[in-house]
Every structure is written in C-alpha cells, then in structure tokens.
Image (cartoon, rainbow, N blue to C red; front, top):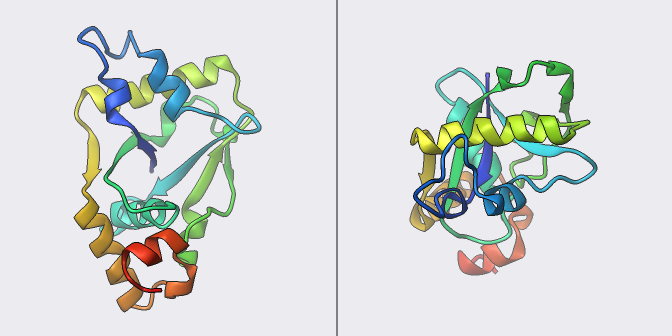
Length: 164
C-alpha cells in the first residue's frame, strides 16, 4: 500500500541545493502542517483503480479548482504502523472517505521521516501533476457517473463548473 498527499512542488524546489538531505523549510511548513499532531493522507490501493480513487478523493476535498501535485509514498516508510489511524476523509466523494488515514501521534522525529519520504518522492520525480482541465474533467465525470451529487461539491467548484 502507498499513501498520497497533495504537495506544492515549488516549495520543495526553491533552490539548487534542495534535496533529500537539504529540504527547504518552506516545504516543511507549507506541506507538513499538522493539526493535533496528525497529517492527513489517502490510501492508494494496489489495484487498477487505486491511484485514480486516491486522486479523486483529494480533488473532492479541494475548495477550488486549481492545478495541483500529488506525492505518493510507500506506507511502510514509518517503522511504527500504529501511527496510521483510519479516519473518515473530507471529500465530496463519500464512497472514497474510507481511503483516508491520519498519520497520528507525530513528533519531530516522525515529521522528519515524513519530510524525507516526501522529498525522495519529489526529487525522484515520483509525483503526479493534475492540471486544471484534468481536475475539472474528473469532477464533471464524477458527477455524470453519479459518484457524487453536485450539491456535495464545494460551492466555489460548483460556481466554476457553472452548476449553480
């Protein structure tokens, strides 16, 4: 199993010396902001639809349509899998809420391990880019395939898709 999380690639690639052993502080403070010592991830199941479902769950959690980058890391990067706690995710695709997991009870050592795992992903070009047009088409497809009622999509996304 793997874990997916939205990241801001520009923060990770701020300067030439950025790398796995030299992670820019802005990347950490921007993409690894914890709440209650937890970080939110989406499970990527090892099947044909795993990545698509995780991406759709992430897109469904966004308040507005924008391009974004998704990093996918191995779930076993943390030695202690007791830190992974199943929690319902906040996404308009309610059938995908169960893919959500919190990395919980984090301390500075854990956060450094997460940063290194994400850095390895970023600097080895193992991220997935979602363009605005792709974001729009995936949400529209979800609506037309009845995976999500339009009313559950965020208001600003509905406005941009001209559904209001």
